[in-house]
Length: 328
Ligand code: TRP
Image 1: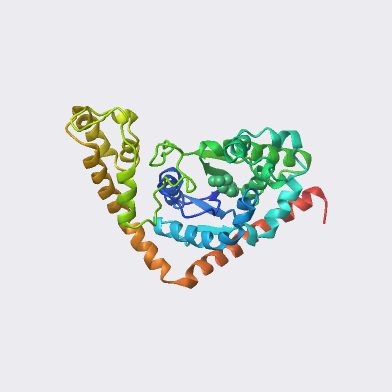
Image 2: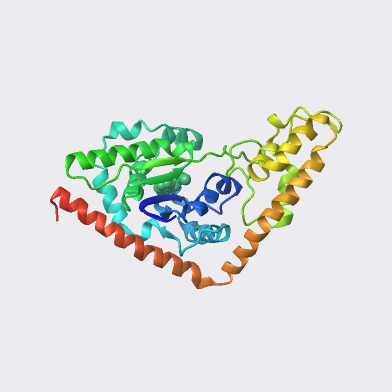
């Protein structure tokens, strides 16, 4: 069922290793999509610098971790193309052109950017940060992608990308498709403390965590706040741990819907079971990661191949863009 007419692009900021939230929200879908479409996965390193300039030294290692995460969950470099944003300067060139197709008023209206500024407490965001959605439009349109799998928070960026594509096509000549988002259907998996899962909050289980770490983290997780002692009836609908069962082990979640309210199952027991099941799920992923990790040249080769393939495509896009604009 190859459909090489449709191009997919999505990606990640290399801020650290990927966690279970990334798996259920995105990676799992990518593994399926790569059999049907021409897929590109961008590791957006410049985007990290837009609000974390002090992390520049860590990016190289984070890129390696992310590629290992990709490979270990089944993203196959023979099917998909993985590349690093900063290794293809033509993307930045396209960003320059795009920056003149949107007004400053328009970029300032992005609700996700506003939210991120508020959450991070950054008082004086850089120009690069305010305009990173324009850079993301270049990430997407440089390969002339048709579909962009993302979470809900990224929808304003896709809307802006569509506007930029339309403006370019209208002003000059039709070069770009109008890309559509593929919105992740799975509910966002909260962190072990019930808050948004993130590396900085220390509430995430990483794909690379060893079994002991997974167990320790799960045992510390919050559960149903209304269930105080063993024997109390539980409420799966407000239990954070239940979210994990639903996301990873839906059959078991169905059983818990009966068992937990009966009060017969203690939270400690339930968490032990979850840790065991998660470890069984993660075992083959960890095994693959270990094997890929033994080949130090592999990651470099994959990224180099990805760069060559993507750059060829982007050079063609820029050629079309400049031809349409009648600039050399
Ligand atoms: N902003 C995205 C995130 O934080 C990462 C990203 C960069 C991206 N460029 C992209 C996602 C292009 C989709 C398409 O998750």
